[in-house]
Image (cartoon, rainbow, N blue to C red):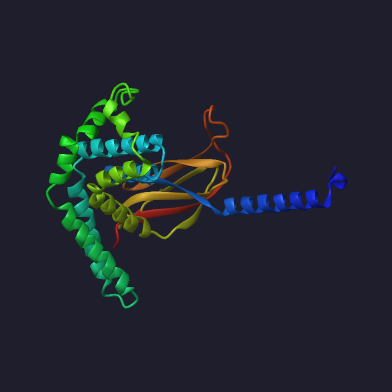
Length: 285
């Protein structure tokens, strides 16, 4: 039917096809990264990173539902940190990074300005993380609204307007006021959030990605015994039909790729060869 189109309609369709092609090409260049922690400490950092990212994203939203989601993430963070004393382990990780970075100062090829900035940032965070948690404990124990939300968050629908009228009233405030309040409450956790971000950044950067092939969808390899690998990262193109399931420990890890065409159906192990990018991330050395 193309011969029946007007010149304007044909130009529009050609333009739309070009845009679609460019979008598909861009999608093919994009990558999805899957991560697998190889110890429990790393799993804790990744979970907290996820919660902080969720709160920061929702905090920017203007609706009451955005504020609800941000508050839920904040309560999850507080619950998580109440059960896990994260700061001593985080300080140890940052001190180890500092020691490793100091050794790089002897290298003539190092970017000294960037290295000094990293060392200064680490020292500031270690000092902040080492201070008494008076502000955090006051927020956690004495803040009326957060304490009530936390108490009822494990009940399905427990934070509805009929259960916590004070919460419902706060949600009627302007978006600017709610965002300001949430930002203030999040600021109590800033040293922890920034410490986790920097720790994970330095670990993720300490790896050279390699191109690998999972023959028949299966891949297994031994880990370098000289470096304690903390995190395995697998990158696939965004339009790849497969995803990996990973398992491993100190000495080796295994990847098994699955296809999942329809969410309502069970995934099935793929039989095709899968090309992927692998990064085994350790502490700096």
